[in-house]
Length: 424
Image (cartoon, rainbow, N blue to C red; front, side):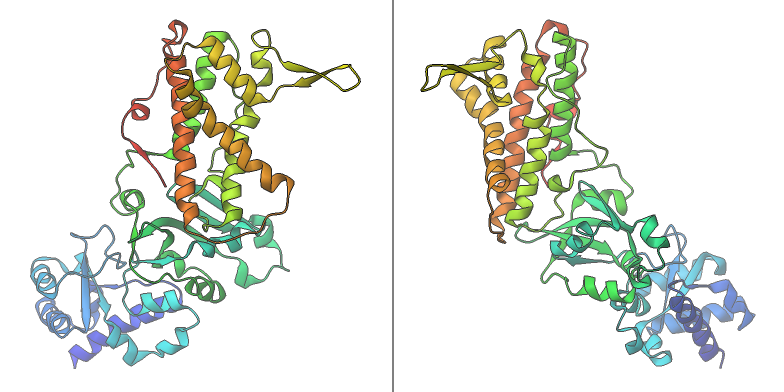
């Protein structure tokens, strides 16, 4: 009789909590209210665990025994710890079969991720989605969506949250999401079940509709910071580009007393530079536009005054002379060739100038004509190449500046000169 009552107590505690979106276990010592003898209680718990009716999470092996963060240990290991650990040092959870006996699981079908937790899935189990899942929130100004290289957050803005006209079903947030890759290296959005279960039923079904097929693995960087509690030692290529620009500004100020680039970097990743977008022509154009703003459009035109001719002159058909302002990239090329002695000017143009001109050229078409959008995984490769070529270009400029005698007090981070840059 005590066995049934104890099992009922374990299941009831979990199911009642699940209805409040809390998927907590019951501390074993609370079950002394059903079976007062500790040794007898442990015998019953061992019986339930062996019969695969309940499982135990132990404080000695989990930072929080009150939630099932990861899959439970093998039954043999659970029994071993059950014998040694105090009753207040572990929690009990019902298995999926026991939950099904006691509640209508199909009533949870409108909350697919909550349903998975109800049936015993670990809270830090993750699900993978096509990148398109985020674009609903990116395109809706009522949501804040923040990208930080390999992870991000999404939340309803305060104004929309307090707006009574805004549907309650859409007042949702996702504490974090991360980056994952399939066997072909195609990026996906991943999210932990615990956070997905916080979404409203409508948004849970929306996310489920974008579920990825096949094996998608969490990227190492998101695993390190979210699960292993380790520092991510590397940097992203996006961060490296902004760091190279910062150093070029600092170096040029130290050497010439003025900055080559204006500071257009922000605290978070510009939407165009994030990895969390589908491989479409439109999103690739977003990348190009963001890079162009960071590069060509941030060149300080006045930096070249006194060093280069700022205009070109040409004769018009009527014989009058027309003066035309030079493009910023033209001035940059002329100035770099004049001020710095390059071993091979042709290689300089190919490695340093050509990537910047390519970005400017790519930007011109969508800026001046209508273009059709299309979807292709080729944009993943093109994105990586464009970012890599940009970084190499800036790194060469920075390295030449850093060799100037007046730049000796500017410290260059070691990670920029090592293999510590991850390309997302």
